[in-house]
Every structure is written in structure tokens, then in C-alpha cells.
Length: 296
Image (cartoon, rainbow, N blue to C red):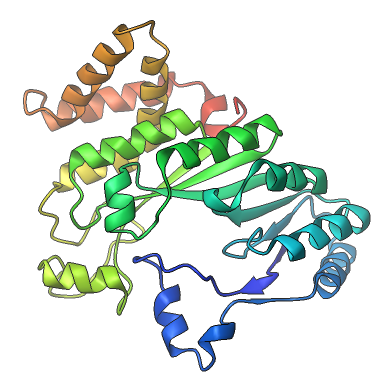
């Protein structure tokens, strides 16, 4: 069952359409609107009765945990009236231990959170997401502590991004240990801050074609090659698993192993075809539980 408790988002991430939509909304001061908890739970109960085979509820709001008072009332009512577990979206900087404990109390089974980029400078200066690596790691680790699954949302192919920054995204996911990780190749929404940046940098394709459902980028990327984009997009989970395992090596050996992996993925000594073949073999060696999130 998929429902929404709210409309709008108060944040101004440079890649997201929300800051454009808000500028055109007739009353931008009330752009974020939450339904009453009672009306929301009534709808969930009604849909659950109509669909007795449903096994969970998905709240498709940008940030279900945005307003603390509303969220506390929601938890109290949901756990009393709805026997189904639920999935929701949130932000790492709006998930302290108290709110995560309350999510678990209500029956939340999975939280989806954006890491977007593992490079703190790129995340802050280009994406407009002012959150530290430490805060990201804390949110994912606390969810695991309270038995809540996690999905990390990531992007690559961004303006001013280099391949080293892409590897930062892989490595931060390896440290955060999400139950499942997703990566998409970036394409800018028109009228957003990043669309203007891409236009100024001459990155936009002349035909306006995007490749959102493929592993390629249609942007002209000065810091990344198409081979690098496709390599990571196709092997993101496998690369995350690899760096996670390398971090488990004892003492300074883990750092040496990480540098060796960096050289393998980014160095010019290894042909791209050899890298792709090696990653294809690695994908078949990774435990299936890693991809399904059972480990976390």
C-alpha cells in the first residue's frame, strides 16, 4: 500500500525540483503541508481492508520524520491501529536516536536515506546538502542498532565530480553498510541550480537527450569518462562490498589494500575490458545476502 502524508520539502538541494516548485507556488510560506494524522491512518486502514494481501505500507513522502510533534502523534496512532510494517524516506540530519527508536516502535522496517555523494565538499558545495560524513554514518548505524533496514540513495556523473570523488561515494557506502544501495547517473532537471551550472560549464547535450534509465551519461563530463561511469553504475554494490571487506584487513594492511583497489579502478595500467571482466567475476562471488540486505 502506497500513501503520502505530506506534500513539499523545505530543503533546497541544488539538484532537486523542490526549490523550483516552491518558487512558483502561490503561497511559498506554506509549501510544506502535512495531512492530519487521523485522516492519514483512516486512509491506511481503508486501503488495508480493501487489499487484505498487502504485507507493508510505503509512505512516499520526501521526509516522513520532518515535524517532530506530528511524527510523535503518527507513531502513537499507527502502532495502535495498523498491524502492517512500513517503509519511509528521511534525511540523516533528521534522524536522531530518539526518532529512530520511535520508528522502530511504530513498526518501520526500512528507511531510505540519501547519501548522494560520499565526497563532503561536493555534497555541500555542489549538491547543497550540508551534512557531514559522521552524521551519515551515525544515522545508518543507529538504524541497524534498532533493527531497521536501510536503503542508501546515491548519484554520480555530477558537475565538478572526479573519479576519485565517485570512489568516495563507494567508500562511504562501504562504511555506512546500508542494507541496499542504489546509484543513478545524474541528469539535471530544467530550471534547477545544477541545470544552470551544467549549462554554464557546457555540459548539456545539444539534443537535450537524457539517459536516466541506462548506465550512461549524456552530459559532457570533464572529470569522468563514459567507461568510468558505466563501470561504477554497473558494479556499485560489488565495489561497495569489496571496499567493505578491504577495510576489515588488520592494521595498516587495510589502507594498502584500499590504495591497491583505487589504482585498479582508476589507474591507466589496467585496460577497461580487464576491469569489467574482473568485476563480472566478483559479482558472482559476492554472497546473495549482501545484495538482499540480510547481513544488515
